[in-house]
Length: 435
Image 1 (cartoon, rainbow, N blue to C red):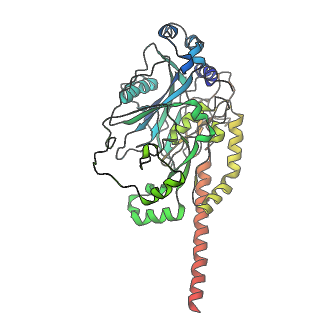
Image 2: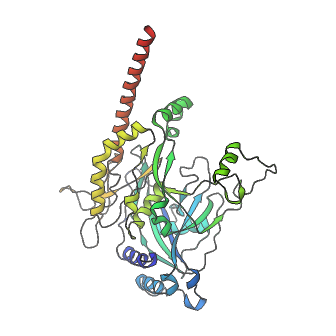
């Protein structure tokens, strides 16, 4: 199998030479945010570099020359490429509290452009400077409009940028405790592995209006179950935890007895490392960040990141079946569109937000900069056509196009089915009681 480093070299050169177009804000949406996909190559034991064999790239040379020089080194060719992720600190009212994400945040008025916002936010959140000579700015990934998952309200335009650290040493990080709980370096091999694909379950009843009350939310969960989203279980090679995170070091001096069911499972071979009864929840990459990574990972062999991505659905069996039937044709059509495109799709969605595809319209009367946003009922706005440099249009972000419209139809069918089923059951029970 070809080393990931060799393929990564080609991908980064392609990203630099073929940047994705700028996406302007839709009407009534002024917010923009930027994130940084920061890559590095971890040396292996048998190809560990010395100081003289890993010079900093010449900043006066072109980006392609810097990439070619970096990837020509033996320790890089035999190394293990990685990306850094953050786990956001838990904050009340934060839409993405506790999520695994890329460093970044909202663009401020003093930021010169979207890339400057990514650089500033990375420095503030994890203390990593992306401007020195040992860091190469590669290019960008598809910009996307983030909206509420079930509505037609655009929240912001999200702009991902790609950076490459050229030093073989791990960078020193300084975590902002109110923003970041931990950082994790994850090999690209792990992100590409099908064995680490999993799902994240989200209680959608929590998104009902507060006026519904606890009973309404409980009934909603009982009827519809949990919503299921595609995810990747992260396996990190190096993690750093914020030392001021509450609960990082237990303060309770009392020994907590092991529950009886865990004592029963122990002889069966279910052991915890170190004998602890506590099992840390796995780090899951899903939602918007997984969508960004799907765009990038699908460029690397075996080019299966989008294929491994699964559509959101529900855990309730009959609702799951109805969703599958109602969306079957659309999913097949969107999959064919993605496969025919030059690059990967935007497949970013979570329990509260979705990243909408930006695609060129084919209306003969529309202007060149007229593009449409499909998926969640958002109208259209004006921006650059999403075209490759040679002028040929390519599909970007079609996996979720029209999916939530069909999902709503499936839910309506399901509710009607459950109402009919309940009516029949109630009538049958009434007839039995009358005998």
